[in-house]
Image 1 (cartoon, rainbow, N blue to C red):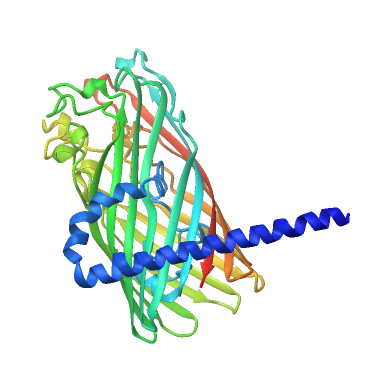
Image 2 (cartoon, helix red, strand yellow):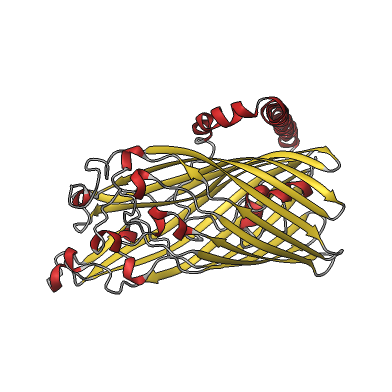
Length: 468
């Protein structure tokens, strides 16, 4: 027994030493980033940031290559593991250095801290075709889109209090994405297995200012990187359907960069009530040149604007209740919002200025959650998220590629405080199975019939936080 104890002590010391060494190394380099990549450049070299930042974004892809995030449309239901565990709430309830993703002003209230986490995400996607080929049912059947079904999504945040009223930080996170990977070809679309892979990464340097003791404003410069691939769409890769033959399908991954602005406010109304509001501009992206024959406007795929409001109420010293309402303007992006009728009835081919898209509606997401401090070391979270349906029953054909139909999510989360001002957080999310059954969804020109979509999702996240 003594030998066992003797062996454990060096192991514990070694683990303690490695953990603390890693923390201080991360903090050292984050301080360098804040000082030399944010503060000094903002003061002296703003033009170089604008010019060269998009070129640096691909270096972050290995940190946050976000695939398959289809919850509130194709946006994530929440940003940061803590927010994910409370239904995605975050506009008036900042909890970590990822808070800028929900509301930039939130970084003004979380102090000096570093957060790093990872989420395992598993969507289950399926399409069922019925009454195809003029009722002869030649293409009828169930098509499984889960040849790739497990995804790892990292996150990172760092925040530093410059003085009592000003903070500077950076949040790196997956804004959203979509993935389908069908196990076989869908004859309505092409001759090889169909699918898409869309991934969007945001790097958001953020500044906050406490303008009064109870009001904080914040601004993030969203530096965006996205990549995309499409396969199995050979039926559309010809002059009858596209403006740019040869630029529709099976071109491998293409990438684009861009930037936008995210503004936020948080106000403490009294000791119990906090309000928040946020607006994120449309993120203007460069075009996917390899897919200029697929997306409208020659490969344009901007990231939609969003806005929202939030409320947090400290019901008791231990219990906080919170809610957000968020609006995502998918229909304002032509490649997402345009109807297939632009092709069939108006003669606008794929890739043209009025070319067809997925005909998504704007989405309103309502998020509610509760946070309970069980004791000084353990905090528990639970939440619910409901989003309106972006996909129309008459437009399911193209959405075989992007079946973002889930609407209702339940979440659980917890944080346990560790020694040395550090903490470990967990979050679980289940998006209930949702179906959209087509209604005149396969046009007569494609043989008629219906395309029915189905999806459900699970995710499990873990994050390490350090207050310094």
